[in-house]
Image (spheres, rainbow, N blue to C red):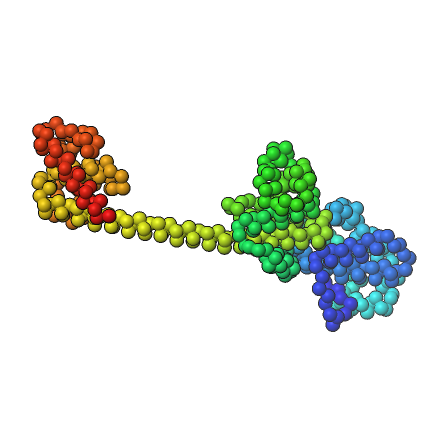
Length: 436
């Protein structure tokens, strides 16, 4: 049954916590302000019932949102509301209303108010007040159980919802002003800004509600790497202190690194803010979002700088590869011209004479090197040589000489033939060097 004083009254917009506080205020006021005036009891009961009905509907919506994985407000359920004594106030109010029933039912104004409420009777009214206490207690208990079992991602959604209410303009303006004052936007400058922003955040002791880190967690903090990015005139005593290392160890629970890009864990941050929402001031909560927004802008600029450096390196590599390919193409043409010239003048008398070309290339700097006869034959084919040796003929010839050019020695011929073979290598190098 819906109780209102004026159906035409403009409905005020309150948060769920405001409604809960209003309900608590009304019930507490009744318990701590005894009165013998029957009409005062009725007014207290009417106010409590009105605030309770509004609260019940809001709690049902809140509970339904939790079941759908949505949480947009931290409900401040005080410990007293979880105690049986707190809800006994409803029984006290009901007993007083029943004890004064005879006098209250005779009040014309009370009867008129009850008639406005969809023809409610006095008995209906008492039952509604009693039921409202029970329903609020039930819903709060159920919500508390749900919140205790909230999945991690819901904390992340809560964090992002809270961040969306934060005005980013002051942070954006501060960052733009810093960029204007800086002489460059290099990676080194941005990395220093990133480190200093985190250090300033840690000095505010906003992570004081976390458990104290273990010694192992503190030892994992590489303070030297932090200090090297800080301005030389920054408070060195603080940076070298145990307190700073403890703060860093705490902060590591909320972040990770992708190279030099700092990433905040919104699920962990959201859980910390959710569980300690009313233990921090609004300014302290906003400091988390200011850090987040600042790091977001720094990361964006760092990515731009790194992407530009990657593009520059890629262009350089492409240019190096292009020059290398150009050199290889020029080299191929020179080798081809040498082979065609030697074929024309009769220096290459036999197909196995290509063996000496392969050997001299393998033993000379800045010329192609071939691991197998097959790779050399394929190279000759690529050059456009029409009459090619076979892999087996090169293999046989390779097994009949040893030494380093030009001091080759052969096991299958006299000195005249040996000199001719060596001259094949010398003639190739002479033609090749003249073409450079």
